[in-house]
Image (cartoon, rainbow, N blue to C red; front, side):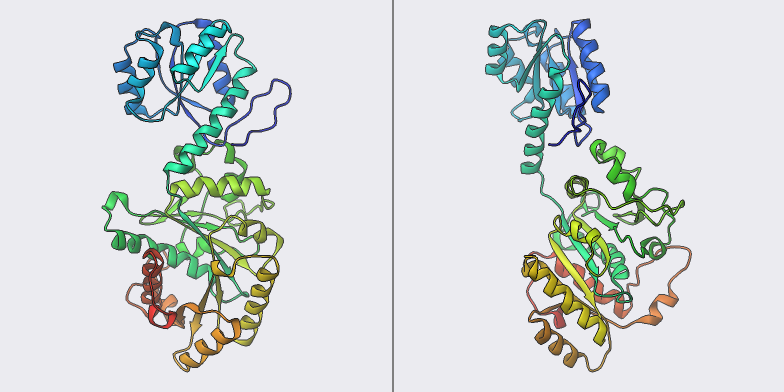
Length: 411
């Protein structure tokens, strides 16, 4: 887990806003910890005297799910090891930081043997920041091992006009019900989808979803160190059932562009959204460029959207060659043939597959008239159209693990 580099005794902020529980008696310890927690952005979910029964603390922990407890273990109602066992109830969390008035070696050894992850004594600063950095690494490792990360797919247009932004938006809307159908989840547990518009050249997701976002990806990158599930709602716009939009930094009310984020911010944000959504579709714009190349390092798959015309196919081959030269795994690349003419479809598909030496993953028919018939005041998925049916089949294939079948039968 990364922190802001400290300047002297300056606070370090964790990547996530932790939930903290306090089980303390000493006013001096309480004051020092509360001041430090205010610096880090952590959220206090409960506070009890150290003499409170372990049963009551355990019930509060079950209710509020704190990540971390600061506890004066020498003052608890039961021996330290038994108290921690009672509160955790067989789980690995919450982690416990034992707090003591003085740095007594015996108190430290006893607390760590009982199951505490860290030991603090007065004065709280600056030792608390180093302790929280170590605890943060433990929390991050346990979250990563216990939480299945959502799949992140980039959507790249071979050239302008191939329809990659439309594919990203409508595929996102199709993935939500497709994932629910395949896994037979309840309505409350349906796979959530994020469409992230990181096109810094010509973003268009807001127009397709018929929304005017008030926040954008630039703000999310800037605030990446304090992101939590509750804070995240400030940066996304709900656009369809189970689908959120993270708007482009240049597609907002102010229309003021943000510079491309530093790589560490990209990595942190992608790691965060991977825990919040089952699918993340990232609109990368057109062509490969320095801005979207830095994003490719953090995605699982790359969908290259092309079209059956000479320039688009030439640009697609150029992109594939660049990816290969830079060591990008070809197995992570999928070709989507958009705006395909009804005839001669088989000729185009076979020729394209021979040209690129790889299968076409999905074929989306040319259905220009469909877009003209869609409502202008709201987003609507074109279910009963050739375009909509093709994307529904593609979404079902993506949501189905190890789904077999060539592209021409899948879409």
